[in-house]
Image (tube, rainbow, N blue to C red; front, side, top):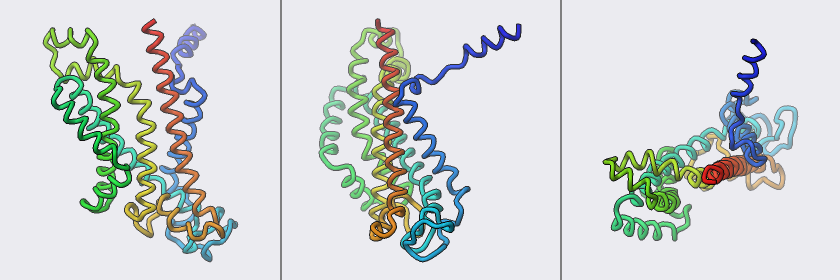
Length: 288
């Protein structure tokens, strides 16, 4: 009886589909490691991130494993303390962009031809501008600060999310089951939730990696330019800016945060690519 119960329990254990691909597994491990480091880093840092522990730009030592920065602070402690703000801002900005852009794209595809034409015109104008320039203009008008940066980056991402969702939603809206849903009296919101959204999740997930990676890089870029975290805060983008003048003497002050930003970006892309590939293969199997 016990063996039968154990077999039943074993049969219920399932590996998440996105992790069944090599790239998905590698991406998941990378994201968990970097994000986990950003979350628990401040608690395990060997020194306070603002504490001077030696002379400026010293190499690795027992006192500072990755050496010291331009002011003599421990590079390892600042790296461990500097990732959480970047991660939170990037996630909030991406979530806002999808909330607005996906809703906008599905509604336009579902109902209004005039609004569709107007929206495409506006989006084409915005997309012709570099994202960083748009973010800088928004920040110049609204000021700096974590909340302002998150909203500005979300505004930069909304047109791109809109185009992806609109294109996918138009294909779904043309299907007979959507017309049948309206014929039986379903509201637009019900059709969007039950018929359109589930069928555009695959391209959304594939695009999510690109969008959040872009948010991570933009947040780091703004910090590098002095528009994000302000000294003496620990922030990966700000660390690169602060220590770039001493990179030939003590490269870890720049390399450590840069490598973590790159690892996070690559890991997110690999994970979302693995998930989207698996979902796409599942959809093809069902259609067959």
